[in-house]
Length: 387
Image 1 (cartoon, helix red, strand yellow):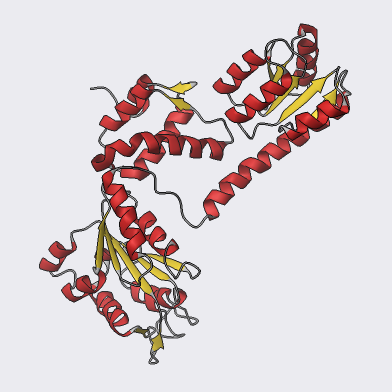
Image 2 (cartoon, one colour):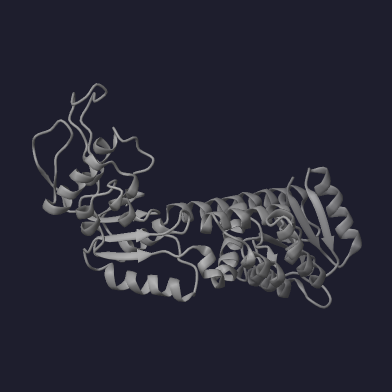
């Protein structure tokens, strides 16, 4: 059910509009002045706001300006019995969705409300889609460790040096790889990702180098591999520590000669690819255990970037919390929820075994389950059970 906030200093108008819109299936709340309306807007998200222009204390136009600071996307329909064309134009310039004169024509008002809600839905969907299709997300944080990573990216990205990114699962290794590509001279080319741990050993060669038709039982047509797909761009080999020794030998040849051969093929294919690899394993230990090639390790590790765990950069948690609260609000089409300082401090004390990935999910959980503002009690109820 859609929520509508009615702000008007005349009780009779609030009651009449409320009854009409309730009958139409809307959930109604009201406020008798702009001050009260602003307080409600800070505490809760509304799909549409109907606001009178002439009111004591905070009038409609002043409310409009302050409301847009609280939630820029909420559609606000101004209503007034004393308005002029100039007032209507000024309201629209300040961000009002529309202007309706009193007494309002019921059909026009209902159509305006529906149009406002349609626009709100489109704005929310557009924000979500833009974030999903954007090339790369932000790297949030000001800790020394993160600043060092950003500085390294700025220095290394313009070169074609191969990079090995190490760090725990969920710490943000993929994000570092994408920023490395985004700031490189290959940014206009593709970045192709291969999760080496997710592909069965017998298929990894076909995935990386492609195959010719008939090269094995299920090869019913020719396939272009990831190396060829990444030509002119970047190939990101995630969890490379899980790659088979046979595939490692072929990757080593591709790095040495800039050539690959499809499975079942005889022709060498020249590729121009920058390889960035990532792992959550200690590759030198894997070398000792003879499950990773030392020569491939040296080829991949021209530059090594270690991504710290969230536990190693707890000072970034306040910034990350604020970022994810805004992100969740955009996804749900709601006003951004606040969080108490004590709640942030409790989050900083938690052991984040799942790193940034876990932290983002926790912030979404807190937004859904907590009250008007996320409190320390919410953190202990929904994130860190007390012993």
